[in-house]
Image 1 (cartoon, rainbow, N blue to C red):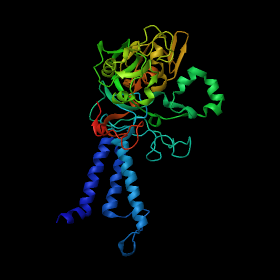
Image 2 (tube, helix red, strand yellow):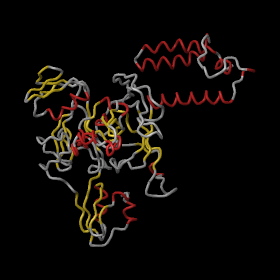
Image 3 (cartoon, rainbow, N blue to C red):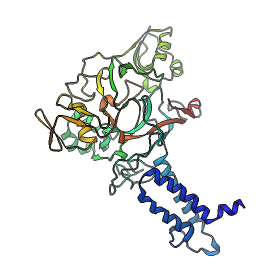
Image 4 (cartoon, one colour):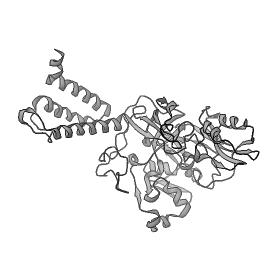
Length: 446
């Protein structure tokens, strides 16, 4: 009886049609309701031969093994692409910017339903790759024939302070092919635009990426739209209060000994990676959590453990907004108000460096500054109303993280999803099977 019901064409149509209808409602684009006609024809009327790779009336009612494999592969690719696009995506921690909360070699899943998945800006792309084709160097994996505006579907929640978030690199709109992992704008500040454009042998081509094809980053969202943040001597302050204590946050320390070396096995127990062990037997430079700093200070041959903190007023040009009117550095900046959608600010040449990229690039306006007059889309203005919400992202490895301190605000249309849990962790400094960090497997991300 049950088998008869499951094989009934009307039951199949009702099941698939209902799931498809729910997906269309979630998508919010009712033009896709036309797909119900296709589903009806596939299961009921069967007037059109949609599966063109199959024979319509195969001998003995059976398809060849090749056709069966093609059918299975096509289904798997479509199903996996939809899951990756709308529900969950795998991500690997490539750098130490989030240590010790997350380690290099952690493999995790990112939930796109947490904040709501974005519909693709460039839907015509090669499946399962991001912005580059495999094997073929510097070849884009997508076509710009179709360009969709930003749209986010309904999610289960919104971004909250201290969430671990995956997002598209805000300065990744322009990329130098030979230095694709570095900020084009930072390189321009260092060597000049003309050198980059004229020296193709050293720098390669300069290319532009749409929002959804920019490199993915993972950081902690320390401030959301409307928050006021500042940092004083390495202490982050959000809305007048010190940031909530997070166990994995670490900063650089100078560690001095009595002249004898620290046992490498002791450093292994503190999970200090080989790449982070700088110095000699009498003085080291380590990124440490407060807990690890206290443990090192108890070592019999350690004479001093001091946090490295820059003093206020020492300007680092690389720090956002890279303007000498804001004498900020990696440990001291702000206060900064994070832009919020529909909020209007007073705009002048003094605070413009903070919001120039937001207005000009992220919100696609024609911004012109003539002496002390600011024009937006041809009109002289003294205020501006933001079109999107913004966020401030920072790495937990505070002195070894390229984050909002260097490139500013992250727009809402750059948000990919929330990091949920680690399913595998591999230590690159060890050999198999010791390299598998079993204790980190299937742990949630906090």
